[in-house]
Amino acid sequence: MAKNAKIVGIAVIVVAIAVFALFADGLLVHKASAVSLPVGVAAPLKSFYFVNGTKGTIADFKGKTVLLYLVTTWCSTCAQGTSALGKNISFFKSKNVSIVEVETYKDFNYSGAPIYQFTKDYAGNNSSYMIDAYSGYNLTATYDPKGYLDIYYLIAPSGKIAYVNGEPSVTMDSLKAAIDNLV
Amino acid sequence: MKDFDRFYFIAAAVRETLSGKAYAYGFAFSSVIVTIIYAYLLSFSSLNLGNVPRILGISIYEILVSALLGIMFSLVLAMSAFSIKRNMKSSEKIGIGALIASIIPSSLCCTALVPSVLSIAGASTATIIGVTGKIQGPFATLEPVFIIAAIVIMFFGIIQSSKKIYSGCCVR
Image 1 (cartoon, rainbow over the protein chains, first blue to last red):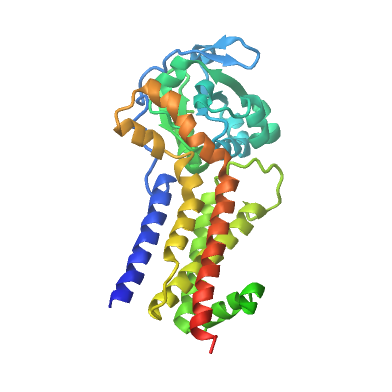
Image 2: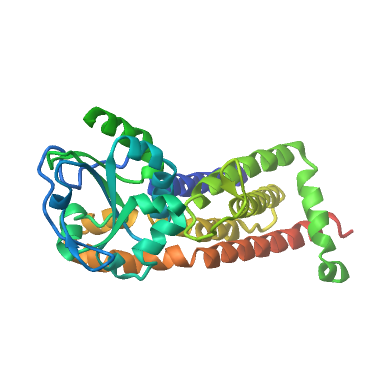
């Protein structure tokens, strides 16, 4: 009886660890937008910096549909997300969606690849369609106040936030549906 | 001692463990399930493997490492269960330690876990922005170290279990 209890106990611990890992990985919990800017509000005009050093904001894209994707370049899910965007470039082109991929402020204080290198590594030649940029502190603090390693905002031509989520590799279908609803 | 030196005892202990149908089926089933779980977790590997060949979208690295971890972990479990049933001292703690080492990178990096914990703990946005990278970054970039450590720990567990099982069953 004691032996069986020990075996059962080990099995429970193993299952608990597996569940914890899957939960932490986001499999069991939908990545909610509860800790981001709400849908429907005007996208705040916080600064980012293009790779040539010039300053930009979402206002530069007024009248266009924009996918603002904040990434951390040492982050594996961000790499997967960038790769997923690259694989679906033809869709974004067909819908005239501009993709602005922005490295979070100082990569959250842990050095990763430069953003242009990161998008090239994971999106290949399709990275030429993406606009690479570095986030100012206020943009990261405003759009990603909880410090998620990746989060994206679909911004309508009106300048309002139309959809928020993360991990494009997992949520691509929802993102595409949101774009279809907009366009 | 001669057999221990040659690692013959490992094969004998594994054979003894899996000679029972329950243990054999359990090992096979567990190997498949654990391999699939690892393949999913490692699909978010932080390693920039470039143009590594892929099968059905999964890189060779993910397949090999997942299979190795899945089989080794399942063997540790089977041998631990076998040892417990025969009142031998088992090495389940080593197995659990190896499991934790192998999933740490995927759990503590690149998920919502660390930011959520920081947020619940009351950290401000400025603190989160300043700290989260320092916590998660090393787990992202040191993933191969954790994987290797997990493999070494599991191998150590298999050796320990094998010595006890071999001594109990095969040395007359």
